[in-house]
Image (cartoon, rainbow, N blue to C red; front, top):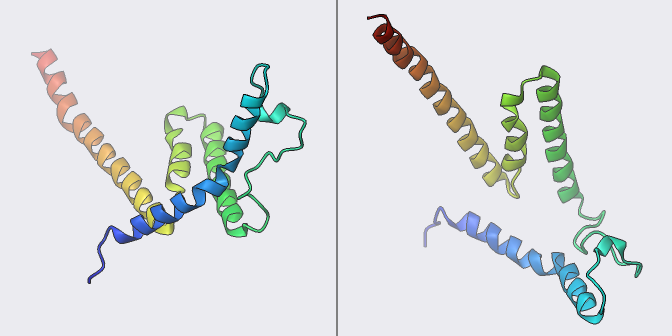
Length: 144
């Protein structure tokens, strides 16, 4: 059987779905506590039962995930500082691009980066063509 191009994303999705139950275990604990209490619902941060703030999947042993999160955060903060330093709010999408491109697998990261770059190039070319072709035509119509 030959390899299908959809196989790597499906394997990645299967891995992510398998990691969800242990990562979301804190949601069940909060639902049980809400049913037991007769008072209004409170934030898990305000509870005094000593519950963990982070999910059980978050620990210092997940160095690869922590390193990746630090890299994405550093890239987003660098873009934010550049956008703020240049006072150029129109390019704020660079910060969003850093977060969008930061996917869970290398293949997804490269694909998203290529799509964002291609979209920016095509959008810039369409804008340039509009300036070169439409603006002179509309200016010539006003003169006559």
